[in-house]
Image (tube, rainbow, N blue to C red; front, side):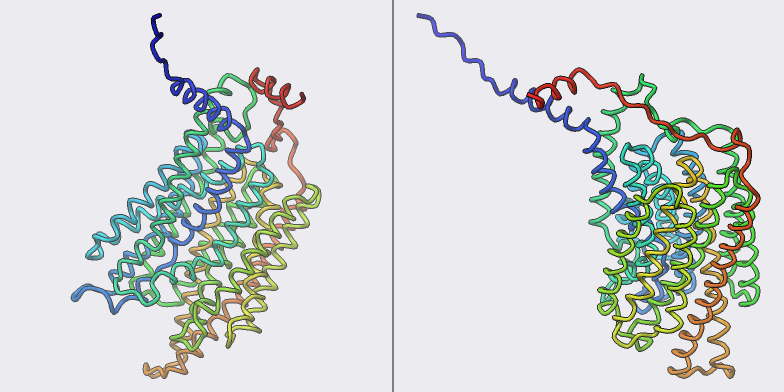
Length: 510
């Protein structure tokens, strides 16, 4: 009797497993999880590229390399970043979030890889420009990725919370890898492994997005944020690039020994420009988010950076290890506050924006009372108040603005941040010079100058947030514009289930 040829069943099993994997990948909860992980990893990577830490490793620079030129080159990341964000906000609406995320993380990864070959200011400047462009792409791309999802309510709360904690922890995270290092190049590649993880997640998200897009491209079930931007929206987003370019150029110019009074004046003019753009927003929700982003950008990272420096050992502080627990508590508190604010009734969002900014002001007041801290544990109060207040204000303002206007408000955050850095630097230089009128500063005089400058900046920043609160209230009193001029509400119809989903549902019922 003839024996039939052996036909292995492995290919059929592999095919069945592949089909099951595709069905699993097309489930919304899988993509939601990947987007949440991307937000949790990519946002801190983007914000940690802002601080200029090259001065902390100046003794390790090659002989003959100018420290001033290196500091100037290393500081290019933030000016380039605030120029990139408005352009990325337009690109992410046209080309979608997934490819922009991959591009941004690929630029960060390439800059990290090139950090090991940097030998002078020219290459450092190029790599820091790449850091700025990559980070500028990630900020709006992660926001749109969260807004595109069905679980966007929770993802937007996560996005706002992670942005707030990234702003509070960025300076400490930037200093952490260069503690006791032997190479100054570490400042150019602080977390290469984390960048690789984020790039892998972005690639997975791109595949999941393509799978989902193939099944829903012909459907009308699409969010408004996924449609290409109109001419009016493009104009509003690109309008923010004009003052951003101006303040970026001025920020680079201030590195050439400008008088501190002129630096403060330039920063004040830039802040007025940002507030003017916030007033010009099309809807009340967009105006509220614009004011909120200006307030958060102005004070959170510039203040947290100064607090971190004051608490470092070279100024008599307890160091990074003592700040670890306060920062961890601040992260947990801010994420928890963001989730609670995101689940609150929408009619309370306006009040929560004001409450969050008030908490932020209280955190600035706590700095004047509790900083410097001998053991570091007291820092939990200002760090947590600033992070939680910023998180609540951001997530509540995002809910009021809607997904499209959210991108416009985001373009105001980073120019306001650069203005905050310029204001803080101008105040710091003034107080340090007053501590050494003869030009010969003692160690204690320098420490006192840094602490007094921080206290003055906390006072100025607190009054700045109060001013923004007042302007926001006055803007709200103007009344709502006609309903036709407001951004249409996003209504997401129930999806039509596929035959596979119906079959799976029948099997689960049985």
